[in-house]
Length: 59
Image (cartoon, rainbow, N blue to C red; front, side, top):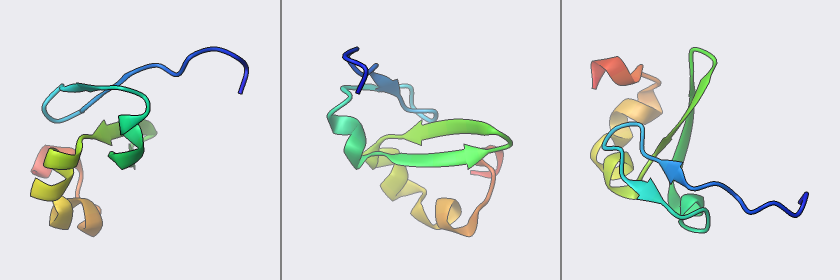
């Protein structure tokens, strides 16, 4: 809201870069004080692990 364009995001799993508008479809996770974003493909593949709250190192 400050007039600056939103930055693109990168998937913490596969490193694919998404446009800020597409990031609305991505999964956001807070792990050990770090915010990580996962693309829709990685989110679908690891949905059970994400919902169980497992750290990314385990999946």
